[in-house]
Length: 108
Image 1 (cartoon, helix red, strand yellow):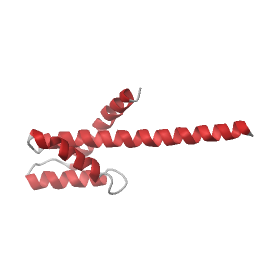
Image 2 (cartoon, one colour; image 1 turned 90 degrees about the vertical axis):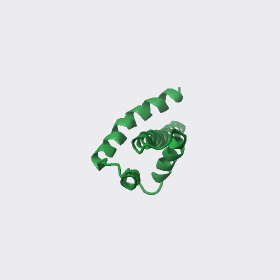
Image 3 (cartoon, rainbow, N blue to C red; image 1 turned 135 degrees about the vertical axis):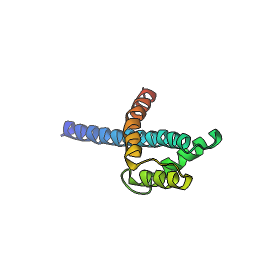
């Protein structure tokens, strides 16, 4: 019986670890997307980190990537920058792998 409980505890710990890792990767990806968007918006370099943080915070509003995409589309439109939703989603996809590699290298 103890081995069953040990296995169950092991699965629970792995699930918790995977969830934390997924959150860190998503937050890092959103920061990277925010830094990319700050450049595309031609914001002053001093504002890039703050803007990236606002993108990370936007992702906490609702599940999925739609909240980030909506924020970026609105910000691009407000600045008169023409970037499609497809391009934003492509950046999210491309930078997810970069973020995963960064987070994995930091956790070693």
